Length: 111
Image (cartoon, rainbow, N blue to C red):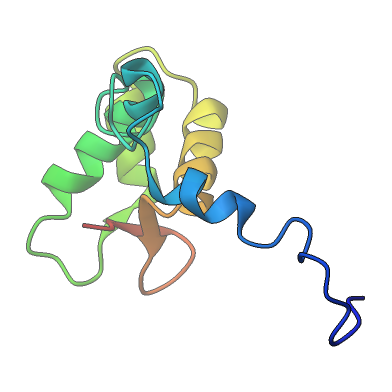
């Protein structure tokens, strides 16, 4: 704790603010790690991107979203296993790319 009126400088106060607020000194490669930069739709893998693409297209205009069995049925035809697809859906949901709608089996793309 700092004592009031100690007369000394407040050590460490304000140090990180300038460094965080300004990215001008950050090398360009480090500035490109935002959502989707070099990672397709932001999913980070071909499977995640395929899940996102399917949910975006099949869920467009739908309030209830896309049923997980429809996602699995579509993507298992492309060589992905049902277990991997379920894991990708969980990952994308946890990361905020998709969200469940009417129940835990229906998902919609988070714009």
